Image (cartoon, rainbow, N blue to C red; front, top):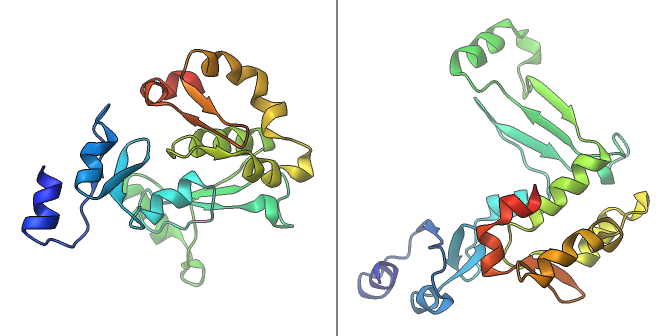
Length: 193
């Protein structure tokens, strides 16, 4: 009701961050012009948070400042064929500032304090975990193309493991994609563990 009033009665056209209400019927959000597009967020059509969708789709992103994280999608780059590269800065402001003071002036461009090279196993796990955060889930063709050079397909990796969750109604598999059901969203952390 609040979203509906903000949009329709008060003509508010700015950004509203909407957390999805667990088990709220889709019709409730649709009345206000919203749809749930990921496990915990809703948005107007074509106004989804591009920032989050980059994470959930394993795209490159850069973060700057204290506690900032970045990811370079390295499987498609010659430099690191086995997995993406994660960069992250100190999460304590005083440690962050101290590290900057200790860095030579000429090296003060973006210089992350920690670098982690994902393994192939990391990449596969992250593709599953982040992809299933999206309400539409994971496209098997996207997954298979991403890991084509390693000879990994979604069904070879997860086919048998997901069968009990499909049978219990936690996952929905249509032959082209896999996604959580409403019931599965509630237990997503357990299922992915």
